[in-house]
Image 1 (cartoon, rainbow, N blue to C red):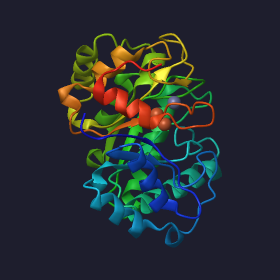
Image 2 (image 1 turned 90 degrees about the vertical axis):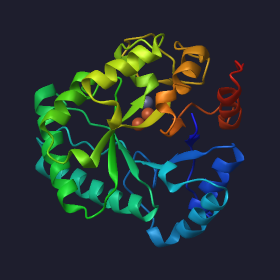
Image 3 (image 1 turned 180 degrees about the vertical axis):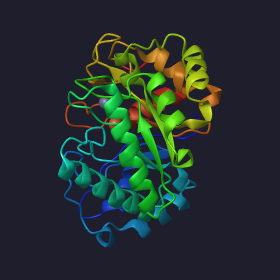
Image 4 (image 1 turned 120 degrees about the horizontal axis):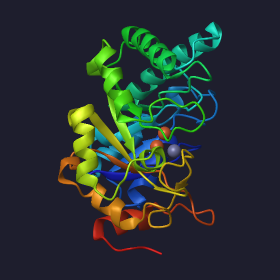
Length: 285
Ligand code: FE
Ligand code: FE
Ligand code: ZN
């Protein structure tokens, strides 16, 4: 666990410089941001985002741009192609998002595999493969997409390791895609975090550990297998601090950015305390 950080904001007037200062104030060595509101597609001009100043600050603090992660907005749904205009919009927006990620110097863009909205898992997977292939053939960047493991809420695809195995068996541009493992999501999908080594072994057997690029470390408000996706603060949920601590400290995850997306407490970000607790191994709260 060398590269540990959290979701940070990107807002006026400091934009990316502000994101970096926020991450540094938490003692973080990794960060993740949305290039705009995650639930919409309004985006500011990249020239206004103070990217070069932010990069310089991040690098001068001894960090690497390899640990700056971007999260695509969750309204991009490539798993449903029943409405051609919506599918085309999702592909175009993702292409732009890849270009924005490249401007930040980011290596990884986290993307939800999407929801099949009644068409079934096979159609969802096949639409995702079609959409991503087109996008990654045309975007002109070398940013890698990290497809996120999902809780299985509604008709979400990507809730089993087998899904990712099947995806990589069929996807032509394998070098452009990896996986982001979210601990809340895999727990909600039914995976047991009491044996973190066993969980990684299973990931390795089905997907390949070299494909794991980003970890989202969150506790869950719901019991294992609930398919809900509601994040809890570390130690305040159904997974518990100890399992999350053991997972984060697996030596096989040493080189992978670990990002907290836990909820704010009383209007304040909990990240400085949660990062310190993970480093020290002290139970918090
Ligand atoms: Fe996500
Ligand atoms: Fe996540
Ligand atoms: Zn989530």
